[in-house]
Every structure is written in structure tokens, then in C-alpha cells.
Length: 224
Image (tube, rainbow, N blue to C red; front, side):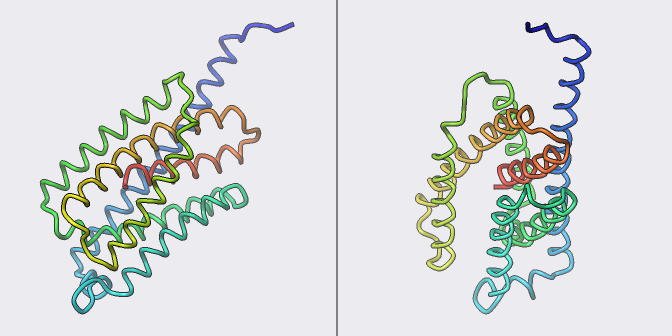
């Protein structure tokens, strides 16, 4: 016989997932702040002139840091459930530092107003898509393979452009629009996946590991 869920049990489950989501967004916010602080330090200290710029363009060190960050994020996602949550948090913030360095050239050539507008728009869009992913009853799992393929395509285009230079203003604008769409959908997809996973994972350590992994996914969706 099935008994109806009591209010006490319902409150316990609701409070559990709320705490879990607060953990995810707390870590994500911390990672975003670390990225911003890293970029700020690079700019005010002039470190970007020695670490990032080379003769006639970006230095080899910049490319090494950029690809190291990409490799770290992939490795951390693959090993998320085989490492301690504290180790995963440390890797998340290390990746945030790498991203802060990688984003410095783009911040350097942008105006303060354009940066603020971009941040506000990104935050609003991210919040709306994350809320949609959490609230919708529609299964978004079918998006997974398409979003993954789209992300791989964006990475390949980015790598090619690093060595060939700009591929044309119109082409770059199209790529940017596609990138915005992909990562907006990623925010909704990841949020629904994280919510569903919370109810299927057993012990607290696994949920903590998933929270860190979720923070990494949401961080990438926001920053990208």
C-alpha cells in the first residue's frame, strides 16, 4: 500500500534540494568572482603585458594557459565522482583563474559600458533559462547530444580562429549568436538534469560531488 507523503517529509525533501541548489549557485558565483578578480589583477598590475602579449600578438604562454584550462575542465568533469568534493572545489576555482587570464585580452579591448551591459544581459538570460529548466515539465534530455555537438563545433571554430585570425565580421557574429543560443539552452538543460539527478543519487557525498560538477557546468554556461 502507498501512503501519501506527509507535510514533514515534503518539507524535508524541498529543503534538501533548495540547499543543494544554493550550494551549486554559491560555488558558481564564487567562481565568477574569482574570474573577475583574476582579470582585474591582470589589468591593474600590467601582468598581461608579460604573460599574455607576445611579439605581434598573443604569447605562447597565453595559449598554454587557455588550453590548460580547457583540459582541466574536461578532466574534472570526467573525474567528478572519483575525487573528494574539496578537491573538486579547488579545481573549479583553479579553472576560474585560468578563465580570468584567458578573458583578459577581450576585456582589455572592450569599453566599461559594454562589459557592464554584457554582464547584465548574461545574468538575466542565464537566470531565465535556469528557472525555465527547473520549472518546465518538458523533458529536455533530447537536447544533450545536439548541445554537445554544437559546443565541440564552437571550440573547433575558436581554435581555428586563433591561428588564422578573424574569419570575417559577419561570420564571427553568426558564431557568437549560435554560441549564445547553445549556452542558453545548456543552462536550462543542466538545471533540469541537476534537479533530476538530486532525486536519484543516494548518499550525501555523491550529492556534494554533483553540486560541484553542476557549479562547473553552470559557470561555463554563464561565462561562455
